[in-house]
Amino acid sequence: MLHAGGAARTDYAEAAAELALRVLRALDGAGDPDPLAGYVDAAADTKAALAAVRVLGADALAAHVLTGRPLTQAEAETVAEAARVFPLTAACDPDTAHIARWRDWAIAQAAARCGLPAPDPPRPDHAGPAAPADACAWRSWSVTMSQLSALALPGLDSAVHEAAHQGAVPLARGACWAILRRDYALAARLGRWLALVHGQGAAVPLDPAPLLDHLLLFGGVEARTVLEAEIARHLLKGSHT
Image (tube, rainbow, N blue to C red; front, side, top):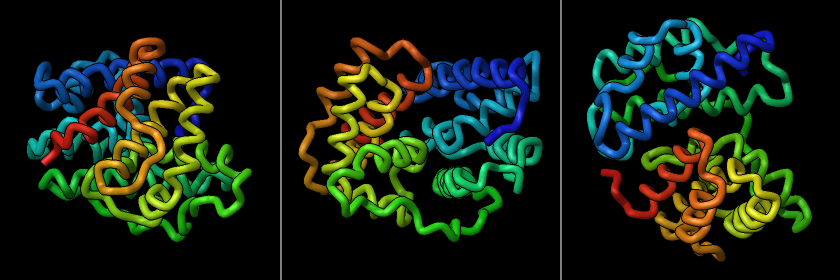
């Protein structure tokens, strides 16, 4: 969703990984209570730091959402500045633009849930990825749902969440497929959806807890994967308020 050359793309990915570590520490009650503002203020490359906020999306606010800690003015201003520097534009790939719009909607909703509403974009016109009716369509659908994993936070409600509730079986298939392929990032994102719908009372054919333990033991080395998995574990523990 961020249009950049190869070198800048690498810088943005590295910045996103560093910011993910800061959000993880805040989620654990350590580190800077305002991980976004603190990171951007201290960054040598402000643009890359703001890009990291956009890359993480609503996950950048996970420490606030899951602990109930109010969003400070500094954090809200950082989210708004990241959106100003990296706006959603018509240049987005038409095939994936709806993903970007859903992610923008999610971060605005997460900010509002933390007590300090950010500018609220309209809910995307795209209805969201409906749970597959075809038993053979679970693979492509689960990949799409993984791209929307930032929506798997408490307090958000949309057609995407309804699809996750209806698609617990294909989500479980996708998570098992990801583990077998050692695609731990995909497994963490799908495990996060399973954790969310499990906590909301959906019948889930796969216990997300051992899945998350497995991927953290064997594949939890990339910061954003660890953040996805730890968010899922918080969802399972019901530690959010």
